[in-house]
Length: 339
Picture 1 (tube, rainbow, N blue to C red):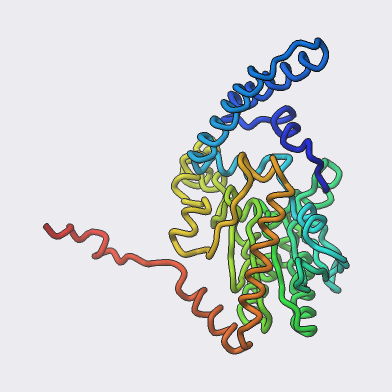
Picture 2 (picture 1 turned 180 degrees about the horizontal axis):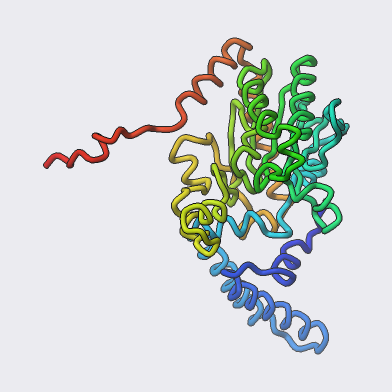
């Protein structure tokens, strides 16, 4: 949904993350002085300037040193831009397509034709929903098998019309419900991975928030993979990992560190190609700037891929995915370092 210029103020006053309490306190002080100055006629401009300097300095220092768990919290901020927000901000003339032609239409995945910058594309975006009603309709971004099948249907349509595919990932995981299991959610994800690996058209993938497990990879096989600065990407959520290893969700911060799920970690491990910068304090503080950064990355990637022949495109995609992951053999791990 479109955001106005007061987004930064709203994000600081309406909801503050646990590690942002001091930041929120400074912002409230600034707001109080501004109101007092407007209502009483007294000049507080010097005090306001000083507090603003402190605010920016503290915000910069805090976000330069986020832990993995704090990054997860930022990615889940209730005012963070969602898939639908990016569609409204960066996709012109969007024509949405519905249904998998087998079971139904999954609101957790939005698909359609549109123009991003100067490039025509097929956009596939996971969407969590903004308010309670929409979140329930979207199953909180947890896609059902019909969502993945809808995505695959429109990908094949994009190939037919020689259009590139752009996928925006933001999900806590695929739907874990009985209905999803009965309709073959694991099979749907596996088929998507197979078909995307050989889809004869460029695919650009961006993790805009949460990128959890098969729920993300079901539309995440591409030629260029990027993450927003405060997004995360992992085989499992920190809570799920903590529940398995320690049998308690309270260990989620430790699990987040162990999973190395931040954008910096993913780039260091060669699991993504680029990190898209976010505005100071996260995308929720300036959704317009965040959307502009995503649009610039997508347009640049599409232009790079347009120049490749289909054979070269598929060859590079195959090589890119085959080189992911580095294996250490037991003897390499246990062998003492040479003096």
